[in-house]
Each structure stands twice: as structure tokens, then as C-alpha cells.
Image (tube, rainbow, N blue to C red):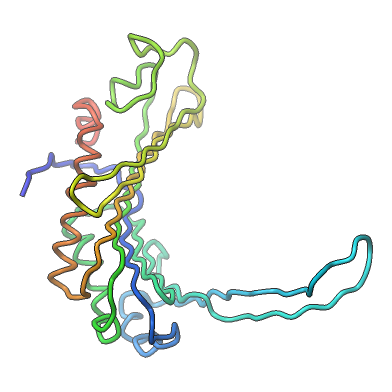
Length: 249
């Protein structure tokens, strides 16, 4: 396994894992039998309502009365920690673990993800996983950003020396990358905002998705998480300079 640089002050502000599965044969309400177990780590539950409206074939122009029908049902269960910084969301075909607490390293994130998912093993063991993904949103603060190449290697520039002709207010771009010989692709968004005089917030958002079909089991998911992490780290560390690494230590 490749050794990645260690960051004492990682810039991660959001870490996310998502699992999509074939939901044939189950209902969203089936997950409620794990409600007590889930609440050991996520004691707050919110039920999100999904509403469909039907106003008939046409709505007349102008001021008029009309009638319609609605079909309201629960669209997802969202469980939260007491500080509401970590979230476990269950939809009929998707489960998402989101952590916005101070990042304590990959092993901690991986263990928390697997621990949350395995509570649902009795249902998920019988289902086919159709996609997995991780998303890490990194945020940096720079006092000056006159030369983006000082901090990042993937840039959009029209000048040879990368110096900007005027003060920067906002900047951003999006990349979509396929990982050779795999079912993995990545969506990368980078943008910077000048939020106050001489201060810039740079967001480096990496989403890595795997379309390979999997069985739901702990070891398979653990291996898959490591594979997704390797892609994420390749993108991250191949795009930042040593100066940026130093700022995180």
C-alpha cells in the first residue's frame, strides 16, 4: 500500500461515503426495525416527507380556483449526532454517511462508516450493491493568491508565468476523470472565493465513484473503501504543491 504524506492539520471539512443498492423486495419502512440500534450513535431522527402533487390536465390562466390531489410519503430517514455534525441518511435505495466534525484521519472515518453500515446487515446482506462512492471536501485559507501555481498544479491559465493581471475575486473549474481499467470515475471541483480583503477560501472537492457491483459484506466494503481512498489521494496529492503540504503541517 502506498504511503501518503501525513498532514497534521488536514483540510477536510466534509467526509462522505455513499452506497447505492438494488432495493427490489424491500421498503423504506423496513429499516425502522434498526431504529434503536442506529440511535446508539445517531440519537436524533428526522423523517423527510416527499410530496407529489397532481392538479389535473390543465390549470387555467388568470385568477381561478382549482383542485388537485397529493401523495405524501416519507422519502428518507435522517439520523444525526447530538451536535448534528455527523449524519446517517437512509433512502429506499441509498445510504449515506456524512461527517462534518474535525477530521481525525482515514482510519477513524473508515471505522465509523463500516460501523454505521453494519447495523443494517440483516437487510443489506441480501441486496446487490450497485455503486459506492466517497466524497472529501477540502478547504484552504490563503492570505494571498496572486500565483495559484504556488499551491496547486492543476490550473487554468492564459499566461506563461501564471501571474494574474488583476486582483482575483472568484475562480473555479470542474474535472470529470475516468480511472483506467476500473469502473471508477471521479468528479473534481476546485474554486476560490475572495471572502474579505487579502483572504481567499479555496475549496478542493473530490468525489470518487465506483460502479462495480458488490456483495454487502464487511471485508468487501473495507477493500472497496481503500480502493476509493487511493484514487482520492492520487488526485489530491498530485494536485497540491509542497508549499500547500507545509501549510497543513
